[in-house]
Length: 347
Image (cartoon, rainbow, N blue to C red):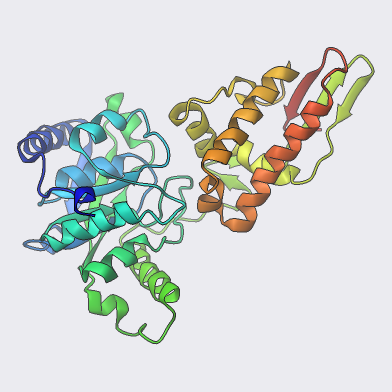
């Protein structure tokens, strides 16, 4: 196992330069402020845990921690192209989300055992702007290492990186909470099953983070980031007229295709051939649609936890079933002559 453990600290000189330049750039291109800076411990080990809606939180966590921080980041999909150059230059611990990535978790524990600092985003991803339930990775690491957790609230993050790169100077804030000791996280959980212990401790951490954030009205369940999740209509057109595809889990498939973050991952991170799915209410070649849906299904064969990790077992499987059922119906139209297909927002 030793060969899998990280050297800590690492890339010391490089990270000092990155931090110095990065802090200057952030303060130059944003209206940045930090509250509760005195709450940072004098030294490690501790875990920094923050909310996560955009790539910007990763930059701020790496740049404004007073200690060198090893951040756990996505290892199951390619990084956001906007963040990848920084992440690869700085270095991070890749973790395969949707599975128990023992190697990554042990690397994090090893950093803490050496008196280091680990950064983690307990929600596990940015597929929704609303606060999501914490995954148990953060509490597993704390329990295994006995390290305390420092909650961080990142405010004004959504769209801030794009605005910064366009010189619009967004307002962003980092709010540091009070340290959560190991005992305060686990003191009343010893009689419960291990998984319940971890989830309740993770929920305590997420609640502490939530308390640092401004109160915002949650978005209706029928919308994500302003995009409707109402059902779509699936149709094909041939010489005999217009017909509707009939298959199970159409509504769940609509949730996938309307979801801005998921479709962005398929397009930009994974670089799947998504041209046929780039918009609704347009007729596209049947084979182009088959290519796009097949590419998604093939990816889910390689990474079966992708949707389940983000949306839960039942909904995630229904979403995948919708994709596969639609593909079956598309393939049934093969050999029927020239076919156009359309996914519409209205009947």
